Length: 73
Image 1 (cartoon, helix red, strand yellow):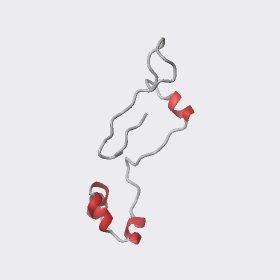
Image 2: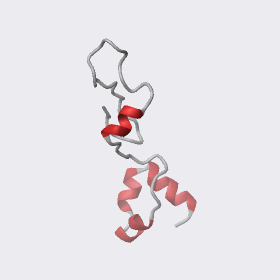
Image 3: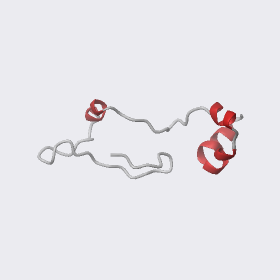
Image 4: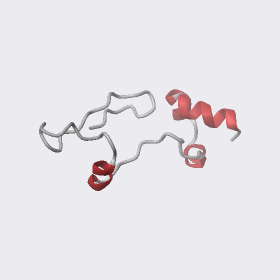
């Protein structure tokens, strides 16, 4: 699969759904693919926590993006 088809499959879910199972399995991972962080990794991120004096362990949420398609907290 050439570069144009790979990028189109990342951006166009309808096009991607039309690919065969073998073609989808052959696609490289999207460079901005969704991933999860452990609680320790989240705590280590600078700015993830609200300022001191507010409720502890209360995280700032992000809105869904076209790439992630889900909100994260």
